[in-house]
Length: 143
Image (tube, rainbow, N blue to C red):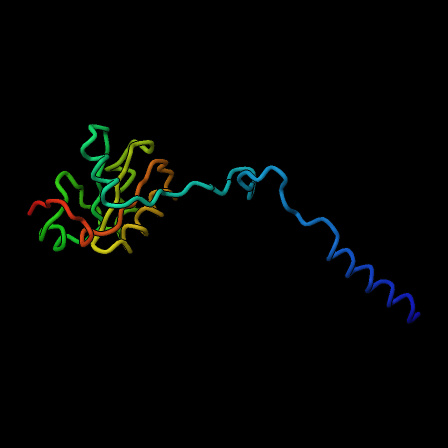
């Protein structure tokens, strides 16, 4: 009886080490259930110079300032739309209907713009570029 118990334990250990892992071979998105998949999209991190090049290029874009009303009033990048990062989930789909639009996101130091960019991607926006904070913006701002 003792031998059989030992064999069963060894068999269980072997199966846990060498058995099926449940990993997918295709490397794509994972089906959670029939109606839900996990997205592998993310935003792109760029610097202020790259953001300025986009702004000056004539390419259609939207600039999101993810700071507070008070911070925005103290100075912001020309043409920026104020949507504080804590309001992105509630306001984005109404104010930004084109989920394929090029969206540039900034805040004061870069922390909130990363949060806002993550939220936009989670909402299905596919062309989000985060460029940090206005404290690192070497170009003009409007007040």
